[in-house]
Image (cartoon, rainbow, N blue to C red; front, side, top):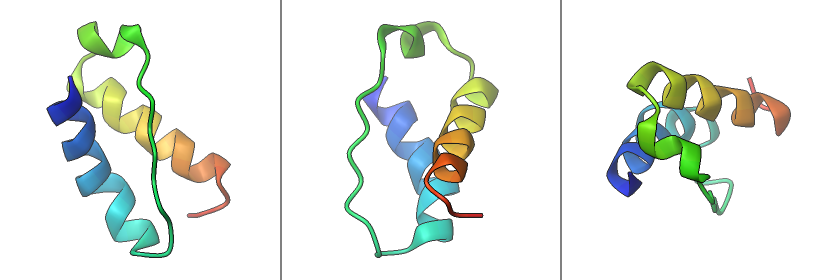
Length: 53
């Protein structure tokens, strides 16, 4: 679970925000059964909520 979240953040979040932020993500139990597309979609949603493109 942690590896999937780290990879999603590496692919989706870091290229968009760079080194401007310290990032802490606390995944919920639902992540365990989530498919890859759902994880990527949620990471993108979180970035959007923080005011970044």
